[in-house]
Amino acid sequence: MRETFLSFSPPTVGEQEISAVSEVLRTAWITTGPRTAQFEREFAAFLGASGALALNSCTAALHTALVTLGIGPGDEVITTPMTFAASVNVIEHVGARPVLVDVQPDTLNIDPARIEPALTQRTRAILPVHYAGHPVDLDSIDELARIHRLVVLEDAAHALPSRYRGRHIGTGDRLVAFSFYATKNLTTAEGGMLTGPRDWLEQAKVISLHGMSRDAWKRYEKGGNWFYEVVTPGFKYNMTDIQAALGLVQLHRLSGFQARRRAIVAQYQEAFSRSDVLQCPTERSDVESAWHLYVLRLRTETLRISRDSFIQELAKRNIGTSVHFIPIHAHPYYREKYGWKPMDFPVAYGNYERLVSLPLHPGLTDRDIQDIVEAVWDVADCFKR
Ligand SMILES: *Cc1c(COP(=O)(O)O)cnc(C)c1O
Image 1 (cartoon, rainbow, N blue to C red):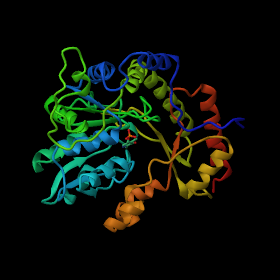
Image 2 (image 1 turned 90 degrees about the horizontal axis):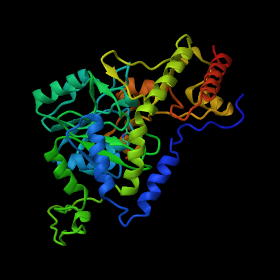
Image 3 (image 1 turned 90 degrees about the vertical axis):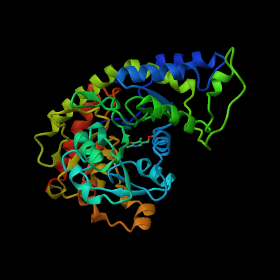
Image 4 (image 1 turned 180 degrees about the horizontal axis):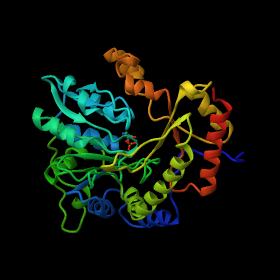
C-alpha cells in the first residue's frame, strides 16, 4: 500500500511561475496592466477567439456576462443540475430564475432534448456547462437558441482546451467563461477569462471594473488622463498582473499538461474498462475533452458498500478523491427556494450517488497512477457482491 497520502488535485506550479511572479513584484505595477493585456492576447490567440477579458474568477466572468447580456429579474435561465454552485449562484445574483434541465447519461451534460419542454415566455438564456471538460452538444443548443431567440452563455470552467467538431470551446460568437482556480487545467491561483465578440467584451470590461469608462492603469500612463466617468454601478472583478504572469507561464505549458492528462486517462481506461464494478467515462467521437476530471461511476448494485464508503476505503489506502458534483437541487438553498426533490432530475441524482473523481493532474507520476489503480481494484475486489 502507498505510504503517503496522495492529495486529489495539487496545482502544477514550478520555478518558472515563481520567477514570473517575482519579476512583476519587482516592477512598479502589480495590478491590472501590461501582463494582463498580454495574457488576454495570448489566451485569445491560443484558442482562436476574437477577444478575451481577464477577470478575477470564472464566477466573476459568468456574473459579468449575465449583466452584459441584460439578464435580470423576471428572466429565466436554463442550466444543468450537474455543476458547481457558482454556475447557478450567478443567476440568483442578477435576480433571474434558474430552470434546471436533466443531463444525458453518457456525458452528464445538459440534455438538449429536455430543454424545449422547460422553455417559457420568460426564458432568456441557456447556460450549459462542459462537465469534466467534455463539450456539450452545442449544435443542438444553438439550434434551440436560434429558434427561440435565446442567448447562450457557456460555463467552460472545465473546458480549457476542449474542442467541439474541430473548434476550440471559446471561439464562437458568444460569451464563454473559463476558470483559473487552483484545481483547474490552467491556474492563476484565482482567476477567470471571458471570451467572445469584441463589442460585448468592451461592455463587459466596463461592468467588471466599477462601471468606469476607461482603464485605471491607462490613466497613470505617460500621456494618460485623470478623467473617467462611471456609467453603471459596476463590480470589482479585474485580474492582477501577478496572476497574469502566472497565467502566461501556465499557458505556455498547457499543451504539455494536456498530453500528460491524456496519457493518464489512457492508463485509467486501460486499467478499469474490464471491471464489472466500474463504469469508465467516455468521449464522444466528434469532440476532444480537456479531461479536467476523470469521473468513475460505481455499479453500486454489484458492490456491498456505498459510494461514500468506497471513498473512505480509498482514503484508508492513502488515495484522495472527490465528488463532482452534489447536484444543485440537493443544496438546501435551492431545494427550499424552488421545492426541488432529488428525483426531479433523476439522471443527475441517480448518477451523483455513484460518482468518484480520481486524481488527474500533470504532476502525477507513473508510480502514483499504479498506486491509484491498485487501490481502486483492491477496494472493488474486497467489497464485490
Ligand atoms: C470551478 C468552477 C467554477 C467557478 O470557478 P471560479 O474561478 O472558482 O470562480 C464555475 N463552474 C464550474 C463548473 C466550476 O467547476
